[in-house]
Image 1 (cartoon, rainbow, N blue to C red):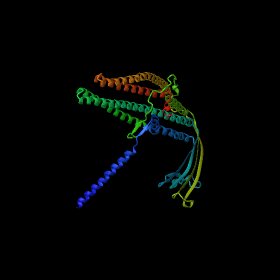
Image 2 (image 1 turned 135 degrees about the horizontal axis):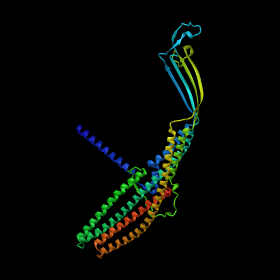
Image 3 (image 1 turned 180 degrees about the vertical axis):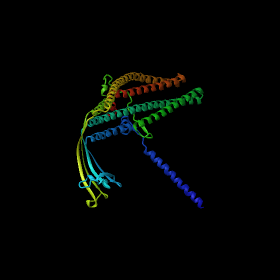
Image 4 (image 1 turned 90 degrees about the horizontal axis):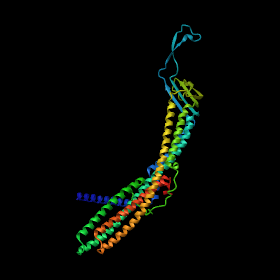
Length: 461
């Protein structure tokens, strides 16, 4: 009886545990809400949560600390020092005792210990740079570094906006393609059901019903492929947004169409973020060269110190002259001048290296401007071609829809074959896919054009 009782209790506890687990899982599932995203929402979320954007902001903050570090080199450097020394065996020094006044000439050489068993020093020292060209140049470089980090953060934000916009549009297009397949699947199912009814009544051939079932299966396979592609693309979008991958999302029904773009205005690519970042890098390399040249300049500094020294036979801390320990203070102030004369042409070699780095940056600036001009021309050309393709495909979709509707009516009236119906249906799907693909090409080109004109932030403004 006891054994059965314990078994009953164990099963009861197990059931309670299972109920708790299932209840917790259901509550968690209820707490995970689907987020509806517009393109602006997706970009703003990415700018706040994506690692690259957050790290860029941290770099700006770190730039302020670098400025503080360089500024510290121009401020007084104050240090405290102290030591305690114990000499268990004092060094003996040979001393001519006959040299002492009043001592006999033949007193001879005596070994005399100099110093005390204990010695301790405590003090404070100050070092102040008065003239150091490298420090002054470093302060200028630190301020330029602040601007470098700011521009780099702006470039990082533009990269985040570009990736999120591209992926958002790709998800949107694939969902449009999925909607077309869903509609086609529903319409084809209706036609299949009509043929099945006719077949059941002996008015249609079995081969026609089989062909419709095969067509439905093919459309369903395409749907599954698009569903999988949508899931993968949504995961990529969430990754570029910095959003947890398991967060369910849905895209808002936005006007996904052609927006007017000014294609005649040619942007000044020297004002682009990529170009400005290289210009700031060139400025930093110029300051780096000046800091190397500063090695030719003399340096002048002021040092001062105040110390307290105690020595005696006993442990000196807290001891008095009555204990055989004597304390004295001393201080010094010095002006230090250092004039470089010759260092084996090391400074000259470093200056030449800095000159080469500057020339490399000049070449990078030329190449970057050329690349930015190319990106603008390519984006403008792509948009022009995409507009032509979109207009053609829009008309083609309308015509394919009309053909499909007429073919379905004719087929139901026995005026068209099943092959005609299937061909019309496939042509309509192809026309819709071509239209959405043309829209995607236009939207991606629009992103590139905005990027080439430095207007990516208009997506969130």
